Image (cartoon, rainbow, N blue to C red; front, top):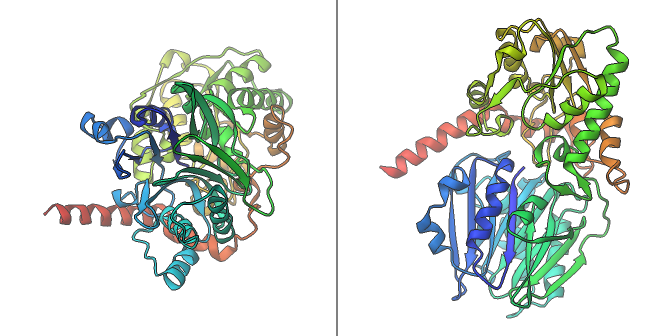
Length: 503
């Protein structure tokens, strides 16, 4: 889950892209980058590991000249945290082409083989995004024209869509031409279009979430449709076309549960409203199934579950309290790249208000339980603060299957719910009672805001992969590449390489 931005404007875009990435920081904390096109049709690039505020200093912002650019915040699910895999990626031919990508390709190995055999293109990193960029470059190169027409862009995207599989929302920038944004035929990853008027002309912006548009003064126009490409020339002309034979909106359900900000709207759904509905239905289930359980207070695990817990407290008629204080300078623990980092970060991230726990029967509410690492430590903190009994409610169902579309749930053996029932999970995290949201209730909570969404990518709950190309062998392969042991080795190798290069 990464965050992407692209802007074509009448004025410099460096500050607007920076500001947009700042409010998309929750989508990736590993690395960030911006590339612009200056007046001499040259790329100006800055990317590095770290948070947006750390990577871009004044000297870098001054160098990022130009009225068009793209930006990225990275959350690694493949490859390593080596800065070489930070985005944007670019290639010099044809024209000069740069790209940012949110999602994950499920056939990246086959793409790399195809690139070498058919196009003699070499991919330098393990990143599927670099393979995607080179596939797109290969198809644009086949147009073999000095100036590309909109239909040439769309035919290249159509050919790219036929080659690649998985989840992708992308913005690419072509020197001398413009920006093109495109989304996979299933619309798994979000992408929105915004505009604003400047000096009598229209500026355009693409972003992962509407909150980025709001922050820099762009008006939301619409979501990019599944399989659609939208091309904006550098002089502000906009063209669009569906570039896939079959399309169906099946957005990632976890966007609404956890990833997206509550002040965003994705595919016609207010994330805030959807979470309120989740709390309503989960509260009703608790009232039905836990009639004999005495709950004194409802406490959220901040911050994604705050709105959910508040609604649960209203349904149950129990007090809502903030029992944890969050350190806002510690990143989101779920999207940290290794188990060691996640474990150490929880204690630094949260601290208890003992008075809200001491001698009480507490209902803790969280958006989900993935590995169980955070949940177990939070329960320990509540016990240490003097809680009498601890009950736990998850706004998402049990996560039993790996995710292959850009979320770091790579191997079933790292998921606490895999092969276990609710009582066994409850024992592992140390609670007196545990309840999960039903999948149907979760889906209805989102569809209540947009009934036109008939299906979701809910593969982490069901094991049903909507792209239809996921085999047990593929799952075993990504488990080997992406489990915490493999990540630790890659991080060590990357660190050793950086030390060697510095010497």
